[in-house]
Each structure stands twice: as C-alpha cells, then as structure tokens.
Length: 400
Image (tube, rainbow, N blue to C red):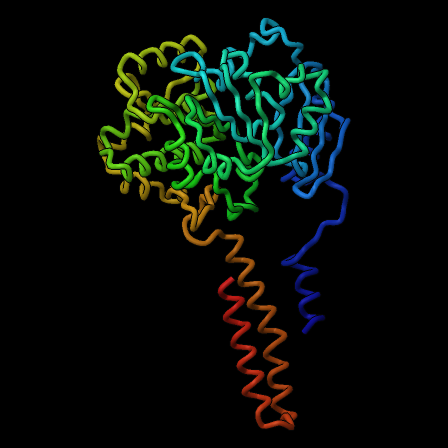
C-alpha cells in the first residue's frame, strides 16, 4: 500500500513538498527582501514570547518597516519633531478623520511603527493613547527613536502593551476617536488563515467601542479591500440595529471613503459615528474627500455607490448579506470570531484536509482491525474496549 501511495504521489503529486529555495508567497518580508526595486535589508531583529519582530530599511530614507513574524508590516516614518516636514501626511487617507469633529482624546489600537500616532500628533490631538499587542514593535520604535522623533515619549502620548479589545473593556475613559488601521494585515492577505481568531472585529467588539465613545465619537478603521470593508459595513449596521436603531437611521451613522479615485476599494476608510452624521457634517466630509482626490463610496445625504447604496433602498440587511453568491459577509461574533473567513460554508482547504485525513486514517486503521480480528485476541473484552477507544477518538477528531 505504501509503495502504491508513493508511486501515485510521484506521478500526480497529491502530497508534494518543494525543498528548492524560494520565496514564500505568504511572507511579506521575504517578498520585499527579494524585490530589488525596494532594496530592503534587515537592520534589527527582536524575539519575544509573542512573535519575531524585524525592522528593515530600503532605498527610501524617510521610512523604515516593522514586520511581525515576517508578515504584518507597518510604517515607521522619519520625524524630527517639525510638523511641517511631514505635512504631506495631510493627504493620507488615515488623516481624513482629523479634518472634522472633536479630536481631543483618541485611542489607537495597533499603532505598529507609530504612523497612526504621528497622524494624530499632526492632527492636533491633545491626548493620545496607543495599545500595541506586540511588545517587539514598541521596543523597535523606541530603539529607533532618533529616526522617528521619539514619538512614543511625547508628553501627550501614552503607549501600552496588551490586547486592544481587552484594554477597551477595562477602560473607564470615553474617547472622541477609536482608531484601527490595517489591524491583522497578514491574516487578511493569506488564504491559508481564514480561521484565525480575531476578536477586534466582532459584533461584540464594535459594541465595546461604541460604549467607550462620547456621544459624537467615531470608530475609524482603515481596511484592506472590498471584502473586509463590506463585512465591517454590515457588522456596524447589525450592531446599531441591536441597539434599537432602524435601518434607515443606522445608515446615517456610516461613511466610506476609498483611498484612490477609483471605485474599487483599496485601503478604504470606514467611519462609524455613535450619533448620526448631520447633513452639514456629511457635506463637509464630501468636500474634503474631493479636495484630497479620494473617492466617496458612501456618505449619507450626499453620495452613495453600489453595492452599499442597495441596502435600505432595494434590500434589507439580511438580503444584502445573502446577496453575494460566494463571499461570506456575515458579521463575526465572539463565539465564532473568524472575521477574515470569507468562504461560505467550510473553506475548501479544510475539506481537502479532511478527505486526506479520512483516507489515511482508513488506510491504516482498516487493515489493522482485520489483522487483529484474524488473530482472535486473547481477552474477550479486548475487542469491545478497542472499539470504544476507536469510536471515542474518532468522534473527538471529527469534533475538531
């Protein structure tokens, strides 16, 4: 049997491992190190119980990058304390929330290399609290303080190491802005990890954020593409409806801006306001968006594009969620916190893995069973005991 399995694999490569040197498509760090145009090289590495943290520099002298486990990358920008030298950031999609609304107090979840903190400083925020889950990222920013202007030691900046969601739940503060930018980047881009737990984007998490905003506070997210944007959109509506707000009114709490002039979402900005946007606020955001040459995708009272314009006019929230034939945009919950699982039903790679496991288990267990049966075990109780153990562990495996 083993020879047959080996022969089939040799010809059809059912189970194949390529040992030749190559860049893993799932590791951003390796891809960028091999990109001659970027010219990146590792200049700092730190290991801790959470992850490996690398800092790289390339041809651009104004930025360094922080990578977590070779994946999730964040920018560390050159800053010497002079806001005029980073004035180009006012055109960044992440700076748009600082043009309007109150901004005295902000909570940043996942500051990474400190770019979000720099945006808040540039935006004139008086009190900045940042929570980073990876201690290596905080250490890296401090290690290169001469490059980044020592932004984590500003008098109005407080940095904590810990889980952002847990920090929010423990906090007694109320914020004007809760800010999440490209949190869990690598998970979103790797098809192999759709079932990675992420409690930052569940319905319960959105509710926690709303409860820690002041009455006019905003939850701000910079996301990746149309998949996680649409999922965040329906999650926000679902949470607002759970708070007793009808669909028509819930839509007045939301704004979506794309990071380019195209209609295809790329690093879009998503804003959920605790209270409804007023027509004046919506018009102001629309005007700023056009000045920055970004594309509005959904602004209440002013402008709405499909598919987001369909909800509330042509279909209900439930119909909108079930509309995509392939993509799963059901809101994630704490009992099933798989925000980045966009597969409907069981992900295809898990089905393949299950069939392979089932085949291998049968190939080894069935011959063993008949072999034992032929030998007629000495103890008459042995067969029932073995059967019970086999049944128990089979059910345990199926459960997992």
